[in-house]
Image (cartoon, rainbow, N blue to C red):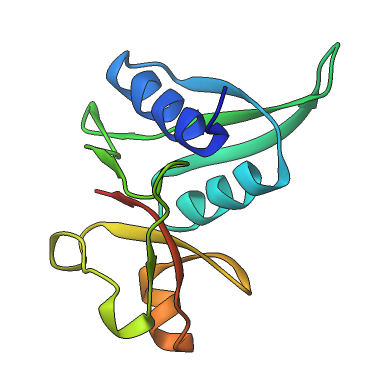
Length: 129
C-alpha cells in the first residue's frame, strides 16, 4: 500500500456505500487524528482502538440520517505523487460550508474552518461532504 490515508478514506466511503454500521481499519496515529476530526463534525460515530493479533485496528461506527449516509462523497486532493499545499487564505470552501476540508498543519490534522480561524495553512488532504 503506497497511500494509507487514501486507503482509510476509501474504506470509510465504501463502507457507507455498502450500508455497513461499522468499519475496521488498520490503526495509525494519523488515521486516528483524521477519524477524530470527522467524528467531531458529525460524519463518523464512536471510534475505538482494538488490539488485533498483529498491531491495532480502529473500529469506527458509521452514522446515517433518514437511512442516508452522513458522507455523500470524498474527494482526495493530496496524493503521494502530488502533494497539495495551501495557505489559510486559499483554503477552499466545500459546498458553501456544508462540507469540510481536512488539512495537515503544524498543529495536527484540523478542518478548514479551524485552519482559517487559527490562520494556519498546510497540506490539503481531502474534501468531504
